[in-house]
Every structure is written in structure tokens, then in C-alpha cells.
Length: 184
Image (tube, rainbow, N blue to C red):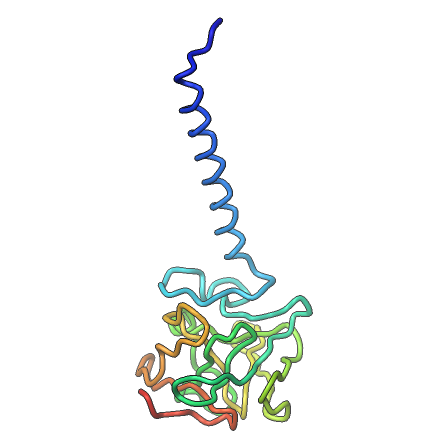
């Protein structure tokens, strides 16, 4: 049996294309797994708020989330361990979260599997946790539960600043743990 030399490159191209798609599929699937830092996606329907650990979780290998201070157009603000902007929700009462279901899909809580770590510029005395209604542990700062925003596609973005959603406004936090209302 002889092989047609013209068919060999096409077969090789198809094989490489299928192999490439398999690698991309595995990479995308790995991004959605729990256990490491997972990014806040810019669109809904991405698994936020489902399962036992919200997708906004920023647990490290030790299981603990971290909070730091970063420079932004709004001044020095709180960010998670990956530089993603953190927000407070004005509807929260004390350290109890009032953001569940669809709210937690758009505004994933910053969760932790251990004591959160205070990084550069953060007061360890103001860092704490609270238990959410789903049993996960949410990080708090100065008594405020902390959230990410699904509309922030990259570290340093603050697209949720000043939003009025789910019954109250959302603000980034200063290093002192107060909402920054300017820039909204």
C-alpha cells in the first residue's frame, strides 16, 4: 500500500490541531479548579457562588488568603494576594455578609481556609474573618466583609467602584479600612 504524500501534511495538521485544542481545554479546565487563587471573571455564569468555596477565594497552598495595599487612581486601596481590588458592601451589617446567591456571583466574597495574612501596608489587627451562610469563611477588614468584583478583568481594575447593586453601594477600601467614595 502506498501513501499519498499530499495527505500526510493534512493529517499531521489535523493531529496537531486536535492536540492543541486538547491542551487549551485542559488549561481552561485547570483555571476553574478550586485549591488555588482563581480570578474573578468578567462575565456571569462562571461558577461564582456555587459549591462550597466561592470562585473568588484566594487561598494559597496553606489555605490562607492574603490582603495587601496597592496604589491606584483612587489612592492606596486594599487588594487580594493577586492584586485584585477588594470592595465593601454598604448593606452588610457589622461583619455579617448580606451578599448571597446572585449577589455573590457578581461580587464573590474573599474567602479563606485559614487565618488571613496581612501583607504590605495592611494592619493585622484590622484583619479578621466571619462565617458566611454557606459555611465558608470570609475575610473581613476593619469589620467589613471583603469582596471581589466579577467585572474586574485584571489586577488593579476598580470597575465596581461606586456601583449601586443588590440594594446598596460598593466601594473600594482604604488602608484604614474605610470606603473610598471618590472616583465613583
